[in-house]
Length: 293
Image (cartoon, rainbow, N blue to C red; front, side):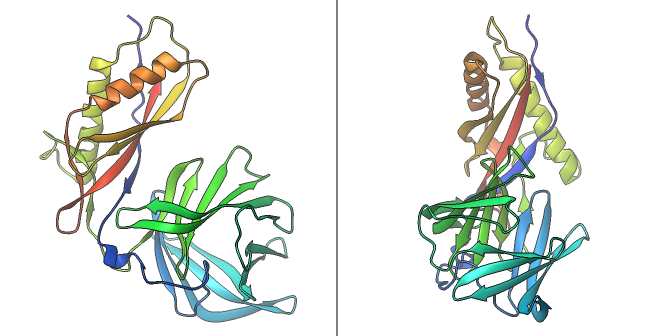
C-alpha cells in the first residue's frame, strides 16, 4: 500500500464577518492617512502589533517625516518615517538614505511605479477589492501588488481602505496580516469534538489537528501513480463547523489525481465546533494542511 505522510505543521488564519461597528464603514479620505495620534492594531503572522503616529517628526535631506512606531506583542519595536505631499505618500528608508513613493496621489487601475533603489515594484491591480477578517467584510479597497528583487518568488498584495490605511496583506495569495478592532477580543479557534477536555488551548489545538491527521490517514485513497513532493491545501471551516471551501495553494507538477484526492478527503472531514469570538459568536476559520508524499 502506498503511504502518505501528513506533516504536523499547520498555519491558521481566522476569517470572515463579525461586528460591523468595528469596520470603519464611514471612513473617508486618503488610502494611507497620516494622522497624528492615530493608532491601528494588526494581526501579523503569528504575532500582533500596534502602529502609532505620536506627532514626533524628523528631518532627512530637508524634508520632514512623521515617525510611526510599531510595537509588537513579541517585544520588538520598529520605526518608520512617512510624509504626505499633495495626496501622495512617501517613505524614507533610513538604512539606504533614500525616499520612495508608497502610494500615488490619485490611484488609478494599472498604475505602476518602482522604489528609488529599484528593489521594489508596485502595481495597482484593483480599486474594488474585498478582504475578510474575523471581524469585518471590507469592500471597495485599493489593492496593490508588490514584489522585491531581494525576495524573489514572493508576491505581496496589500489592501487599503480610504480613511483607514492598510487593512489586509496576502503573501503569495495567503492571508498574512489583517487589521484588528481597537478593543480587546477573546478568540477561540475551531475545535474537534472530543477535544473539549484535552487541557490548555494549545493542547486542544494539538488534539484537533491530530484528529484531522487521523481522518486523512484513514480515508486518503492513494492513486496508483504518485508524484513525490508536497501539496498544501487551504481549508475554510464555516460558522456551522463544516468544511465550507477547499483550495490548493501549493502543488506538485502533474499530480492532479493526488490534488483531487486531497480535496475529496478534506471535504469529508466531520463537523467541528466553529471558531468563536467574544460572546461565543461563531466566525469562519481557515487552516492550511500540508500533504507530503
